[in-house]
Structure formats: C-alpha cells, structure tokens
Image 1: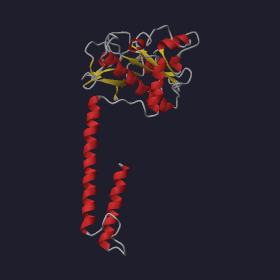
Image 2: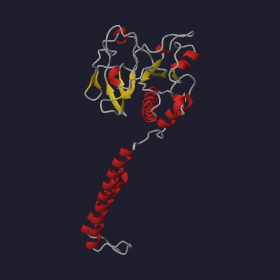
Image 3: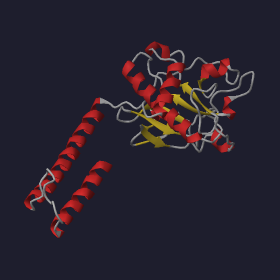
Image 4: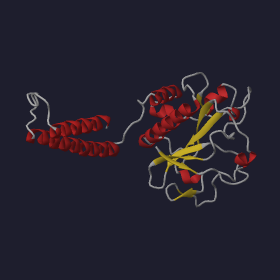
Length: 262
C-alpha cells in the first residue's frame, strides 16, 4: 500500500480540534469523476500537485475525511491520510439516531467513470488493506454489527445523511459491503493481500537469489567437511573428533540455523 500523510491543518474540521474514540470505519466515495488524489489535497511530488486551488486544505470547505484513496502522480493507487485517526471528521452528516462522525474513521475512494474494472480492483484492494490496518490498530471486528459500513448503510442505520455511496459503484464490479467486510476479515488474518504481476516477478527474482546464496553456503560447508574426512553417512568421526572437525561442525550448525531463520 502506497501511503502518504498530508494533514489538512487549514480545514475548519481539523481546527475544531474535537476527538473520538474510534468504534468503526465508514467507507465513502467522492461522487465525482476525478480519480486523482491531488484534487483533494495540496499534493507533493509523489501525490501530484493541486493546480486548481480547489483542495480541501482551506477554511470554508465544510467537510473533511481521515483519508483519500485514489491515483498518485505516477498513475498508481495510494492512500493519503488527511486527519489524525482519532480526530472527529466531518464526513457523513447526521441521521435520525445521531452521527457516525462521533464514532467512525472515514475515507473517500476517488471515483472515476465507475466502469474501469482495473481501477476499481486497485482501489477496492487498497480500501480493504487500509480498513484491515485500522481495525487491527483499534481492536475492531470488521464483521461485527455496525463496525465497517458505507455512507448509504449509515443512512439506513440512522447515523448519516442520505447518500448512495458506495452501493452505486461496488455492485457494478460484483462487490458489496458484505464482500468488503469479509475481505477485510481475511486481510486481518493475513490472507487478503494480493500481489501484482510485477511484485510477484520481483519476489521470485529475490527468492531465487537468496536460494542460490544459501545453496552456495551449504556447498562450501560440505566441501570443508569432505576435505577433513567427515563423511555424510556418519562413519567419520567415529571416535573423538579433532579440533578442526569440531569447528567445521559448529560453523555448519550456526549457518544452518541462520538459513532456517530466513
């Protein structure tokens, strides 16, 4: 997960200074066809820069979430944290039973035209990983009632204003908040992280190099043992070992332990 921090200190929400004890995570999407993170934050070289003067780090914005998920400057998908996780956000308004602003961490997924399966898959997986991290950090069960919800679910529960996100988008790509919560639970168990093809290739190159280095080390140790007359069938040493033999055996044991640790 590509992660950046750019706290929106000029936003009125941040300046209000109210805090929460996080009891859940609310998922939003922006409702605008602009997947660039730089639309919502001032930006940086990695994020990209906001050139329209319409980011959220200014007074009078009227809303603020804890993070955004969308495209970075290089076109890859990442996260920008925009509020401390325990700062009370302005993200869901109020419903008949109160407001999840008082209880839930929030993030916005930057929408595109809603039809790009590749982009959706990337932001969905990033949202899963971010939510899993937050649930771990605050000891939350993502499948417990009302813990991980979207804005539209918040409205149904009476703790948010009447918005459709994210159920106008997720079903287009065969997902729902139920599948999202299940995927978050799997990610928390270490089963949810997916590698891209490029990441898999990099992993395999690194793995092969490490394996070759380990094999070379063991080959050298075996050669040392053979040179001293220590056979692999246990026939030597059959009596008291020499000092040299003991040193080779000890070094082999240490190296084998190190290899097993890795």
